[in-house]
Amino acid sequence: MKFSRTARAGLLASLLLVTTACEAADWREAETEPCRLGSLYERVDCVTQLTAQWDRRLNAAYERAMHMIDPARARTLRDVQRKWIEWRDANCGWYAHQAGTMSLELEAECLRVTTKQRAEELEDFEDYY
View 1 (tube, rainbow, N blue to C red):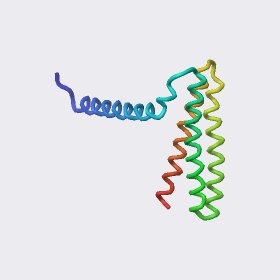
View 2: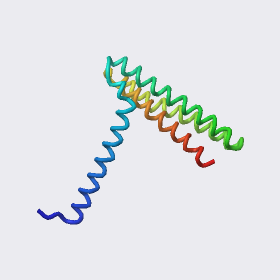
View 3: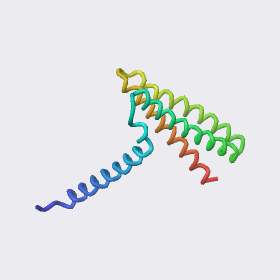
View 4: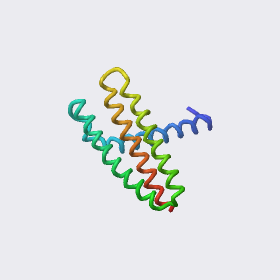
């Protein structure tokens, strides 16, 4: 069976996407693996504890960033951070208003992922200054 160049390129791209998605899923599972057991409330509590760890990292990176930049940029960063918190809470809070108990897990996971991403973003900021 012969495949055109376009078909082969599409197949290769699909395989790369699947591989990347699987690697990302493996990483996520590694961090949240302990949270997969227990009742719904135990799982949510576990993810909430992971979020608290990321939140501590986020706050530490934010404080370091605030001390690296001039006062005018620090005010801007403060305003941006406040807006980010408002957005995160609204975005993840949206899940809490869905029907069913699964909404609790979805909201907790949203908070974890979003907080982790912001913490890493602020930690990366240090590399530029």
